[in-house]
Image 1 (spheres, each protein chain N blue to C red):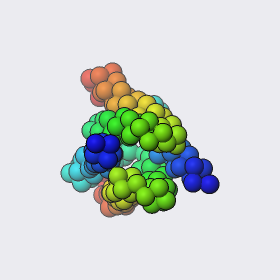
Image 2 (cartoon, one colour; image 1 turned 90 degrees about the vertical axis):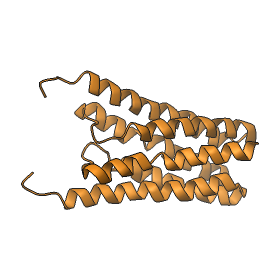
Image 3 (cartoon, rainbow over the protein chains, first blue to last red; image 1 turned 180 degrees about the horizontal axis):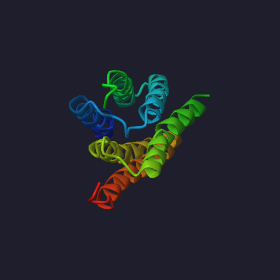
Length: 89
Length: 89
């Protein structure tokens, strides 16, 4: 029961980044998104991953593998859309 | 040592929202930010909070109290700046 709660919590705190990834992909605009947010969250999730491995806590491990991957995807999108933007805009 | 790692991880995954809060406060623009992202992450962190309380894991509890508070702050900012925007913009 508690492991299931952890898995649902982990599914939310990792999939929560997807709407931002999809929105960024559609609009190719992320000017209002602070790059520090997904950057700091991504590094933090890597540390949670180490913590989860030490505690042998599967929900923590899975959530932070997925979450950090998505967070760094947002960082990459932010830089890509800034660099690729038409300078005439 | 591992508790310290958890505290540092928690400090990052909660304070990571602050740059977005500050950026939003300064620019009063959050058009490119998906409201679903902080919304889903905030709900997920409330579930992690319950999980942490069950596991009596202090780093998880502290990180998710702070993190969910900041995430819901971003949701509130998003709605506030949209409603308060000058319609002539």
